[in-house]
Image (cartoon, rainbow, N blue to C red):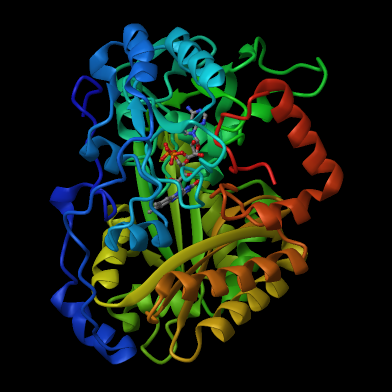
Length: 527
Ligand SMILES: Cc1cc2nc3c(=O)[nH]c(=O)nc-3n(C[C@H](O)[C@H](O)[C@H](O)COP(=O)(O)OP(=O)(O)OC[C@H]3O[C@@H](n4cnc5c(N)ncnc54)[C@H](O)[C@@H]3O)c2cc1C
C-alpha cells in the first residue's frame, strides 16, 4: 500500500474495509446460538445526517484558504466522519442515529492550513474535531456542539508524507494522517520499521496514536507509541509548538507529554518525529501453555523484571483460551485448556536467537509448556481480523465490547477479580467475560477484557450500566481507567477521580491558555 493511493474508508456502520465484512462463520453459529440464542438485528439503511448547521458564507471563507474540494458538506462524507468504532458507536450507527455528524468535513494540507482552520473556527466559534483514522473507542470523536455555531471534522487524511529520515540518529518525521501500514510502507523503503501494531493498525493514524498514547501488540519490544516519540509539532488556537530538539533533556517539564495523550483538546498534532529501528531480519511467534492465569502472569513478571522480554508477549486467561481456540484440546485437553501465552521475537538473526533462548530458559524453568510456532503463527495471521467478528455477532443480537486497565503486579489479582465480577454481575448469567494480559512492564501490566452477552432491548443502556460498574471497580481497586484506549468523553468522570481536583484544574488551565474559545474537541478529555 502506498500513501499515494486513497485511504480505504471504513464501513460507516461496521469495522474496517467494507469489502472484508463477513457473515458469522457457519462453524460459530451453533455455539453462538447455544450461548446467546440467535436474534436478527439488521442495521437500518439509508439514514442521512441532519442538515448542516453551518452557514455557506462562513464555509466560503474556509474554501478560499483550503480549496472548495476540501470543505465538504455532503451527507456521505459527513456520515463517514461520525463518531468512532466502539460498540455503542456501532450500535448508534446501525440504528441510523447520525445526530453527532459534523456540519462539514475540512481537509487541510500541512501545518499552515491547520493553523488557518483553527483561526477561522476560533473567530466564528465553530467546534473542531481532529479526525485521524476514526478508530477511537472512547467517544473522543463525539464532541459537544451545544454553544457553538457548528462543528467541523478536521480530517488529516491529506497529510500523509514522510517528512524526514535521519538514519544516523534513527528517527523519522511523519505526518499525522498516515495510517499504520502507510507509515510502515514509507519507512520500509529506507529499510526501517516503527513497530507499532495496535489491533486497529490497518486503519488508525500516526496522529491518532500520538493523541491517544496508543499501545501496540509489540509494545514489549518496541515500546508504547508515546515512548517512540522524540519530537512533535502542533497547531493550537494561540500558536504553534515545535518540541523535541534533543534525545533527552532537563529543560523543565517535558511539554511533549502535554500534547501526547491530549486527544485533540489542546491542539492538532501536525507531525511527529519517532524513533525507528532496522527492519527485522527474522520474525517468529510461538505459544506456551500455563496451568493457570496466575502462573502465566507470574512468569511474565519474572521476564519483565529480569529484562528479557520478547517483542510480543500476551497471556489469555482460562476463559479466553477456551473460547479463542477452535479446538481447546490442542493445548491441554478440553476439560482443562490452561492458559495460552503468545511470545514473538523480531530483530536480527542473532538478537532473536539470543533473546528466544533466554526467554525459553526462564519460561521452561517456571513450568511453562512450549507449544511450538503453530499457535503463534495462527495468532499473528488472525490478529487484525477479530473486529470483523464483533460486527457479525452484533448482527445476531450478541453484545460484544472490550475495555482495558492497568495496575502494579501486586494488585493484578484483585483488579482482575473485581472488574470481572462487576461485568458478570451487571450483564447477568450466561455472559462471557474474557481477559488477557496485553502489555507488561517491570512494575505491572495491563488487563484487557472482552465481554459477550445476549443483547437486551436497549443494548447501549445495557452496556453503559456494565461499563460504569467496571470503571468504578477499576478506580476502587486503585488502577487506571485506561491503559491505552484514552479518555474521550466516555471516561471523563473516572479520569477526574484518577487525577484528582488539582490534576483537573491543571488540565483546565492548559486548555484555557491554548484554546481560549474552547473550540477544540469540546467535552473530550477535560473533565
Ligand atoms: C478494533 C479496535 C482495536 C483497537 N486496538 C487498539 C490497540 O491495540 N491499542 C490501542 O492503543 N488502541 C486500540 N484501539 C483504539 C484506537 O485505535 C486508538 O486509540 C488509536 O490510537 C486511534 O487512532 P486514530 O487515528 O483512529 O484516531 P481517531 O479515532 O481519529 O482519534 C482519536 C482521538 O484523537 C484525536 N486526534 C486524532 N488525530 C489527532 C491529531 N493529529 N492531533 C490531535 N488530536 C488528534 C481525535 O480528535 C480523537 O479524540 C482500537 C480500536 C478499535 C476499534
